[in-house]
Picture 1 (cartoon, rainbow, N blue to C red):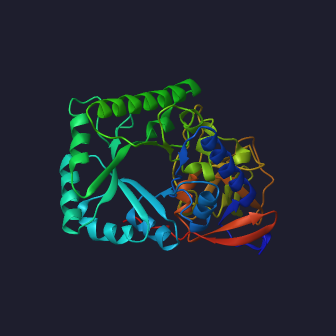
Picture 2: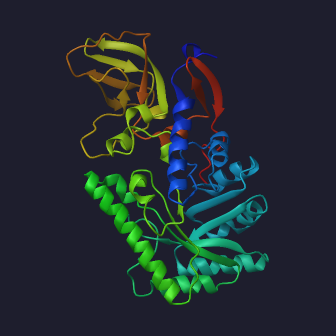
Picture 3: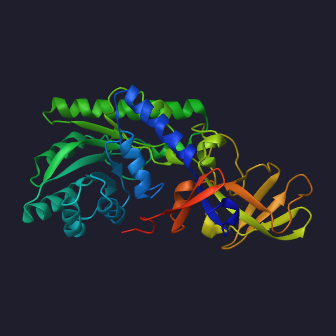
Length: 366
């Protein structure tokens, strides 16, 4: 296939750019003596996961059990689920642990005890980490709470669970307003995790691993002392948000959406065939305002001002556009992770050549 022969909208992955992104992050991890465990929720592709492992990644992360099952079936031998799984999933988790080295997180004492009981009944022991809230205030225990070390010690004592260490996610870094603020978030996360690990060790709790991960602060976090593992996800493709947060340039963005102009209602307005089912409704975040639903490559004056399901309504901010129905454009989306989950298949692009890339783990939300 050629890019020119593809039906639109189509998701394109520039192979050379994606591989360059993987090589760069892996080299940084090696240089800093840290294990890389990429989050596969961005690409959801066993082929891309294999690229990552072949370059030195210790394994991958998955958002849900359903994703992990796909990657285990594809031969990925080490999978971590940094998501608060409920013990109702014990049978699936144990079955999955027969096919890959599996670990997951806990962040609630009652749930940890239920997991212990469920695994003891099945005569199994599985690795866990305790999730720590380092400022995002989503999941995780409060590291400053009086009972934080007691909670971690309790998890370490539970049969069926093998405590490996602590895990964090600085998701609030996506909301940083400046480079300095982003760096401060990374510094605070690392310091918080080191101090909590030291308190645990002083209390006799063995902490082997300190795992962190997010793409925006990676350039600061991966050089921090204390972390044993880093889990970036978006770095494989990047997107407009990562550019706006200083984590990448537009030349680093491997994923684009190929779209066709299907209508031109006015000289200053065109319609693309890439609506919310392709570009998503996610807004871009970053240090400066980033209006619209993506960047149209080679057309900086175009603003994708709104989306309906099948249409992108695009305004020419400088009065008019030369685009006409039938013309094609490439769009860098605001959030590439969600775009991957919207299609069954992307296209690996080398020059004008295009090869099908199945998104095997898309839609695995349980």
